[in-house]
Amino acid sequence: MVTVSTIIPTFDRAAMVAEAVASALSQDGADLEVIVVDDGSTDDTRMVLAGFSDPRLRVVATTNRGVSAARNLGTSLARGRYVAFLDSDDTWLPGKIERQLAYMADTGHVVSQTQEIWMRGGRRVNPRRIHLKKDGDFFRQALRLCLVSPSSVMIERDFLQRVGGFDEGLAACEDYDLWLRMLLRGPIGLLDAALTVRRGGRPDQLSNRFVGMDLFRIRSLAKLLATEAMSPWHRDCMEEELVCKTRIYADGCCKRGRTDEAARVWGLTRQSLRGPGDPERGA
Figure 1 (spheres, rainbow, N blue to C red):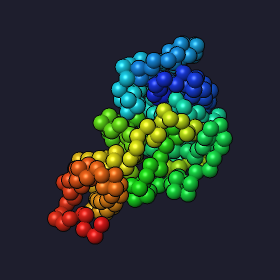
Figure 2 (figure 1 turned 90 degrees about the vertical axis):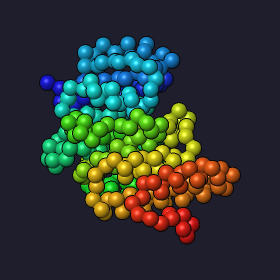
Figure 3 (figure 1 turned 45 degrees about the horizontal axis):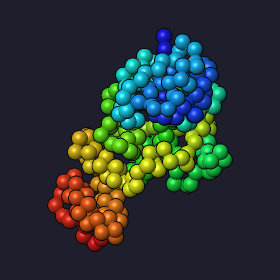
Figure 4 (figure 1 turned 180 degrees about the horizontal axis):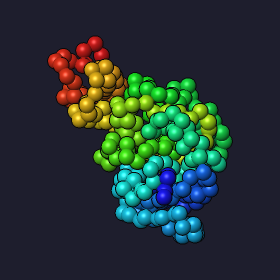
């Protein structure tokens, strides 16, 4: 019986995906399957993956639909009690899966993450203070920016299915959106050990492909306010952050002469707020 289903979405990362797959297949302490979703790669990704003969590895090829669709497809094929995501440019250190399973069994968490080692341009770098990982109920802090990393996460599959997976309508910040939905339902645990290697600083990453990432967070917050059940405190926090992000984004648009875009985003925000009043007042 499969305990952990590892899901690796990839697109045109033939030079890196083999390291990700190898780091997943080398994990001990659990019955594991590794599902690689090749999201329409045009490079040598298929040839690289064909070099693996491990029966625990499944490769699924699909047309290019984005990382959210790839992760969701992998989740739909998963057989394990737990799902662990791994981006194709990241890797796991030995013992990651075994130690995270033990941590979740001990704490009762249905979702958890590990600490990370950050690499940029082949060198280790320290995350800024605002990016330091939190443990437990950190909903308010998570509204500001994404504080959970997909490659470090392990989630009970049933819980992930109830929450609803990644929003395929968001071209970026799809993980920010999912973590907020999870935090609305309970805490996210932190295994305080650096067991995930996060490799950044390349132009193909979503954070470098899109300018104005807060626009996607604004869209996420507006959607969540309209669709998710939450306490008055959660709603107050979310509305406050939505107005803050909208003001910053709209001010930037106005400085660049994009007044129509600023007005459009303010309109989206107004529709999401509960009561009367002008969120622009005092800006």
